[in-house]
Amino acid sequence: MTIIKVNATDSTNLHLKRMMLGTALEDFTVLVTDSQLSGKGQAGTVWNSEPGKNLTFSVLKQFEKLSADQGFSVSMALSLALVQFFRELNIPQLAIKWPNDIMSGNKKICGILIENTLKGLMLKHAILGIGINVNQDNFFGLPNAASLKQITRKTYQLEPLLNRLLTLLEAVLDIDQENIENLKSDYESLLYLKDQKALYKIHDEWVEGFIRGTSPEGKLRVETAESKQIQCGLKEIKYP
Image: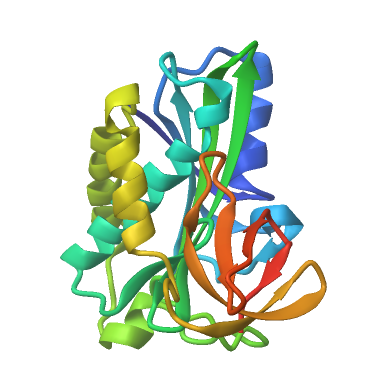
């Protein structure tokens, strides 16, 4: 593992990709910053983070055993590792809001941006961007966001948290064919609002239904009140 620390950058994912243009980085190279100026979430959303109060970093993970259509297993493994990490901190009511936001109750405490690179029919590597709300006190304009400090009333030292999480990630990201099914079962058991009736906006239409799980490609499976099966990709579903 190589850990690179920078005071500030636009985006840890972008910074790591720029580094890869000029040099061959080893597996599990980690780029950490105190201040991420233009952090990105899924599908182009913005990740807001106060400098010095949160964990914002990206990890380069190389793969040899996964096919291109198994890329979602990386998201599942990463999400489950983060849930384990938060459990160790006694964060309550943990769930995974598809595809990979980590929730405590109805508050988002962690976001992930995964960017996969393919080589032919195989997954070559992934850049895993992770943002965890740790000691931030205010999330202006983001009513569904919260920090670990707000939830537990504790102030955290960032470096020990980072070191523990990286140890967990190293252990779980060596994914192979044999453990993908177990990943899927564990991941789906933690899905936010799973099997609860709710009103969702799907393909610009409000639908009453139930989240049932994920497809083999990683799309979200929703069953409507009329028993119709719908699969949703990014930005195709809006939660209540």
